[in-house]
Length: 230
Image 1 (spheres, rainbow, N blue to C red):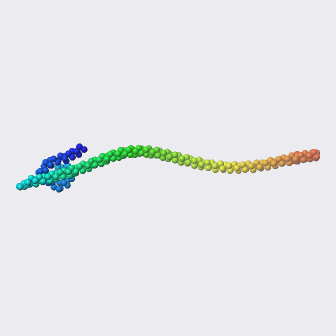
Image 2 (cartoon, rainbow, N blue to C red; image 1 turned 180 degrees about the horizontal axis):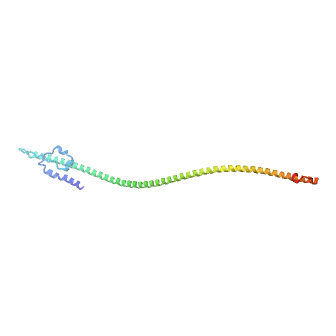
Image 3 (tube, helix red, strand yellow; image 1 turned 90 degrees about the vertical axis):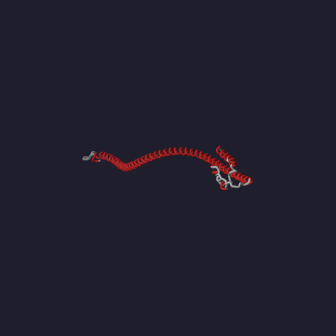
């Protein structure tokens, strides 16, 4: 702001020496009024060419009119230069405000970017941790799968052994059933033989009784014995 005030004061201070030299300066050309404000600030206006002094000097009224015209032209040029300088200063101030706003926005964005980077780092750490846990879980699942496959193979072996044992037991049951049927047949035959023996014994006992009665009747007949009679 100090530089801006200094520029304004410089523009105003140029008025007095220009006014003092207005007597010796000619009327400024039209091209000098169309110069940009930057050239007016950077360098002083170009010095006009010296006036050729005629041999016969004009009267005082003509010189006074010409001097007034030149002063008016200089004042117009000064106002135009001041307006250009003021417009440039306003543009510079506007540009500075825009730059300040851009700087604040950049700082705000940088703060959010730092927060986003921190959040991304935390998320990356969590992702790496979850990835490691998932790998451990996968390894545990793979080990469990291998264990289950071994257990399934063992169960299949045991199932095969049980099937073989069942086949052997079925064969033994079949042989035992045959043996049982044979025992039942033998028991039936034994029962039949027992009954036959009992019948023979009963028949023998009856025969002996008959023989004894015959012996008593015959009074000891010769050549016959109890065994032969039976």
